[in-house]
Length: 176
Image 1 (cartoon, rainbow, N blue to C red):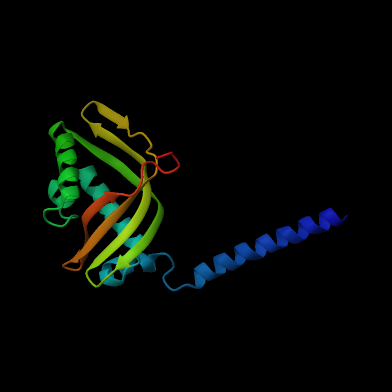
Image 2 (tube, rainbow, N blue to C red):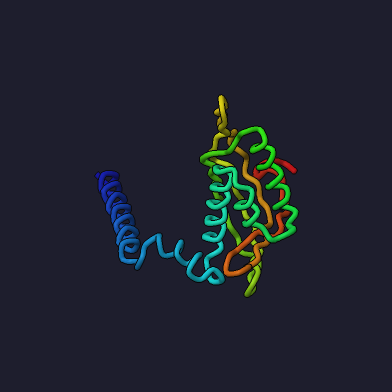
């Protein structure tokens, strides 16, 4: 009898928590769309996670279209990381290949430092999905292990572009 009463109380508490979460989400002006708009309306004030999500989405589009100019526009001029990324895309495009559906799963985004024109983040992520396609080719990308990197973004002409990338660790969860 006491066990049944405890189970009913636990279910009611869980239901109230879920209802409260949904209610708060519905009452938040703009819901989830508001933070995405913040990354474009006021890029200097955009939350770090939204900057990374927007940047990843633009990179995914560049890889899917095979657009080197679009990809290069995501990096500070002369960025070593940008040159490496462009060289990889160029190698794919030269073979008639692109990467569709590139999806990077963000595991954590930690803001290390933020100034008026720069942002330093420690980001843990992994390639979650994508496939290499071309004439006669369709190969699913292997799922990647999680990596942590330090990303340095610069605000250039009201857009966050990537300046530098540095590895912070080997695969997360593996011995170093």
